[in-house]
Each structure stands twice: as C-alpha cells, then as structure tokens.
Length: 333
Image 1 (tube, helix red, strand yellow):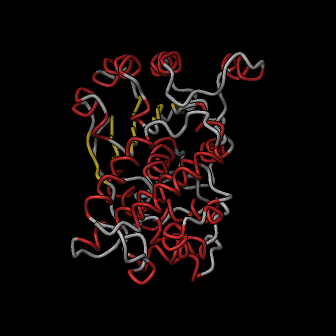
Image 2: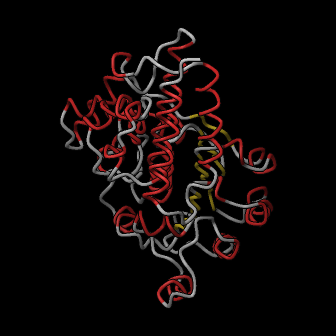
C-alpha cells in the first residue's frame, strides 16, 4: 500500500481530479490499483504551499510535514492496524490503551476516531491552506462510524476537503456514496505495471509472475513480492496442491493461503468452461477436477475466507485447506 515512487497512472489521475471542483471524493476499484496512493497525492496537493497543475511540489514545509506524518491540517482515518503499518500516529489514548495491552489495534475505523475527525474539521486551518481528511479503506467504517461522518460530509464547515478510498465501494452506505464525487480507479497496462514494479527493485522475471499472481494489479503484485513469498513457489502451487504437498505453503499465513487457493480455483473453473486463466499459466494448472467439485470447493473457500482471521491453529488449517484442494483438483466425476 505504501510505495516510495508515485506510479505514472496515479500521477495522471491525480492531475485530472485536481482540475475538478469538489469537497469530497470517493475513489473506488479493486485492491492494488493505488487508491491510497491517489488519495495521498490529492491531500498533498490540496495542502501544498506551492502546488501546480501536476500536484504537490514535494519540497515545501507542508509536503515535508506529510512525509513525517505530523501535518496539523491533515486527519487520517484508518483502522489502527493500517495506521501502524503505514506509519501514521495513533491518538494518545489509543496508543496508551494498546501499549498497556487493554486492547488490540482495531481492524475497523473506530467511531471515537471519526468523532475526533468531525471536531478536527471544525477547527481553523493551522497553515492557512485549508484542511483535509483521508479515509482508507472506507469500507472499514461500520454503520455507526459512517453515520457520524454523514452530516459533515454533506455540509463541510469552512475549507475542509475529504477523500475516501475503498477497495469495496459497494459495501459503503448509499448515503455516503451519494455525498461524494465518484472516481473509478484506472487499470494500468501490463508494460507500465511491470516497469513500475521493476523500478521498485523487483527482478523482471519475478515481477511478471507476481503481476499475474495479483491479477494485473501492480500494488498488490509489489506487496506480494515484499511479503517474502517466492515467485517459483507460486508457479509450482497448482500441481503441489494436486499432490497434497503442504510444504509449498509453509511460510504463508492462512489468509494468504486462502487467497491463493481461491485464485487457483478460479483458474481451474475458467479452464473447465473454456476461458483463459488469469492468475496462473495454463501449463501450470493440473488437468483434474470437475465443474461440480470445483464449484463446491469455491463455495467452501468463500465460507473459510469469512473466518480466516480467527485465531485457529495455522498449521492444522493449512493442512485442511491443502486436503480440500487435493480432493477437488483430482476429482473425476
């Protein structure tokens, strides 16, 4: 999610959006297309002391304050798990509660954080360039949190702008969506995606495998590479699952395994129905499996994905997932 270089397709979209008027944007699209990067590019430009049509200058005091996560006129609303991952500071109380082990970092955007954001929006700008509120991933707002935002989103006080970014915009309240100008993220072409991924230090052969593994989504491909998973392990995954070989998943979390198996199941079903696979090469897919068993496996994986973050025994869960895959991929009737 956090990248050192703004991708060219993100810079183009930022320039297009900055040329338009509006106080609230909703950026939507599948994960890995750069919603967070685009949202951050917008708030940087809104708050920049020397902005241009291309965006923020990158060198002024405001840009530096955002870089070091201390800008007084920027409020970032994320689940606490995301805040910690991306280097944004938590509120003093939230940090104290987590340090004292009173609770774990939240995976949702908490309603008290939203109330703080509403109060923030009513203050006078500290730097005189207005204020900005960035919400990501916006679908992590529950109904109570989202309703706390509605009034301010509809009638923002003063000079505050909002940008909400989401990988699942359909999950947002219709009233939230209706109060924002919508923008659908652009899918970059393969050549541009590979050039950008390789520019982050990923070897070309690995970049190509990871981009395919991510379904053509460049930021997801980069995160995949940075997770430590091996490109060759991805290539070998389908036939290893058909053999029941759990060792290929030994360094993967259950969530990563379920995601990978969902992609394998998708491609196996695609081939069975005469379509092209998306995440693996055709030659790397096992020949077995029937439509009925693969469809049942797909439903089972969907059910598992809803509880995959529960504190199960990871080793036992991986063994069960591989056994399920082996049965589905070797079925004959």
